[in-house]
Length: 342
Ligand SMILES: C[S@@+](CC[C@H](N)C(=O)[O-])C[C@H]1O[C@@H](n2cnc3c(N)ncnc32)[C@H](O)[C@@H]1O
Image (cartoon, rainbow, N blue to C red):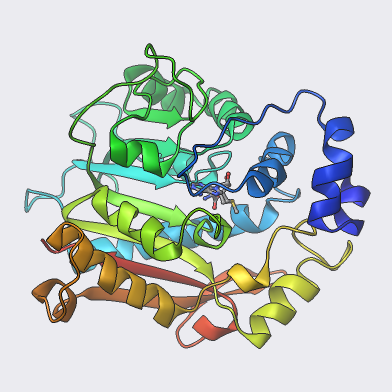
């Protein structure tokens, strides 16, 4: 399987290999207006069984995870959405495109088991992690059960894995139970028809923006939906990859080269879908105005003038790991964050 993944382009993998490689692979139906690309879903679902292998195809995500916690801590230090001045575990997190749960599970581990336990730096009270891939959510749940603390949070409902889309969360039609269900399923048992969609203190979007379907959505629409899921005062925090020449060389030519040079499976990325920091910032500015104005664009709003925006590059140094390097945003990977003030 590894050699096929490494030598075939993604469309070939998709069309010729998957049925043989993953006879049990089940792809959820994608909604007409969802941002989920069937190709991306096939690609990531095929990685489910190796997701938690620290030396496997998701190795780079495992190595990046500590930096995510560091970046979130820096956002909270600048302004906490917490209603209390004392540090208390009050924050509700939503992880969009959680995959097999590398970040979601590590965040769930920071949720205190009971109210007497001291809060951790994430101030997390709950974590809801969503992904459109049924196979990845299944893998995420199964892995989470190995840790008694995380398992306890799954049982109490403080930690939920939902096989659903951002669009369904926004529409209030996402399943509220942690039972497996397919996005687009019309089973009324799985779906809650809340008229008010849930809102979260922190929405995270790690390595997802570059995978949304350009045929059915846009980064602007997707980011606006993320902002809609955010409470006023909350942070939208993400990471993605710049569309520059250095990033092409690093992320497509070198990172997707055959083993032992390459670190991700061939076909993981499409350079044309990468997004630059100024583009993300612009979409977030417009997204904030759309959220504030309920869809009507008006310039010069306070939301945008006072927009709290953070951005820092992340560089992978073989043998050392990921480091945040200010000014390296154009080389490839970078973290970004915006606060929804109102
Ligand atoms: C590179 S993986 C990142 C997984 C996880 N965020 C992490 O960094 O560990 C991209 C994930 O985004 C999910 N995804 C792709 N398109 C999506 C969409 N339109 N909405 C939400 N998730 C999506 C995929 O199923 C996959 O799990």
